[in-house]
Length: 448
Image (cartoon, rainbow, N blue to C red):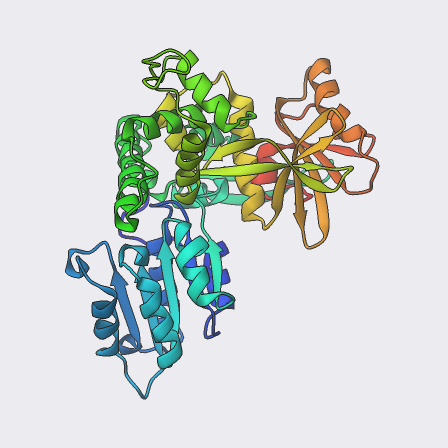
């Protein structure tokens, strides 16, 4: 396991920061709390110092530090101004900057007044959808950070991936630990599915007890700091019931990949006993949460990057639909922490992994609708498109027919694939590729 003080590179995100280094836009790194944003800033600082940027040119502020507690925007501006070297280009790094009220005023002033390159992180998308967009529209670039991918998870656990050619053609990925012992990719993938990809899990030695303590801490931080405390800072009163918030989180975590509406959430909370109806329908004492209330709570969860919503796209009408959406959770370890470790809905958990991997690879992702058929994912990138079905196994004839039918009904030439843990003997069904999901995650097969 890695030393907790050792910084592992996240090249996907580091390269995106480097690509915008010394350009005018403010670099804004967003993502769920504890996904690695602070470490990414430190890695970027190391990169700068390895390329002849002097330590005195770098100013670093973490607003979760007690040293900056109760700092105002004016204090923030004065603190930075006092440390600017007029004859040098400065590199400013502000971690969890949304904790400073009116922070955007100060950052905008730095951009205008000083010769500087600015990097900030935030754990709530509200900072971009409201304040920041108003002050710096067109003058920031967002780097969306996610928990570890499967390949990053292996790297953080000090596993090495080696390639070997298969006699019948193609490449197989072999996985070894630091002592040279070989592991099956499937057993390591099962560990990833169980504990998720939060970087802090690497300090747990993959002990379930330690992992749960870490995950519960992350969950509490997201709920308390990024949702409830943010409401107080903004002077809003939309999220007023912590118990209801937690019940909606549990419901969404239990329902990843399922079609959901705000009304159905409220009704299900009542029918499942997660929420008590203390009055009759229509009574002023009824505790059924309204659709508007539920939408506000779900919006807060999306803003905190705990859940991601995926829309439906009509392949014939070429438009997004307003019908029921689906939600996926940012990390399966957090889900398992909330609803328990189980395999009964493994198919939706696999969808969750594929959805976020497509996002990492730069795709815009939607659920596809073609007449009465549904395609798990329609992924678009740079004008190209792939259709993706996800299932646990392609060994059964009924399953093959179910997964292939929606793809067979699409009459275009874009790539169509089925990803599964057991793809079977056949890799091609009339132009539809049946691929190993794990090999796809490890980059051993294409497309995508």
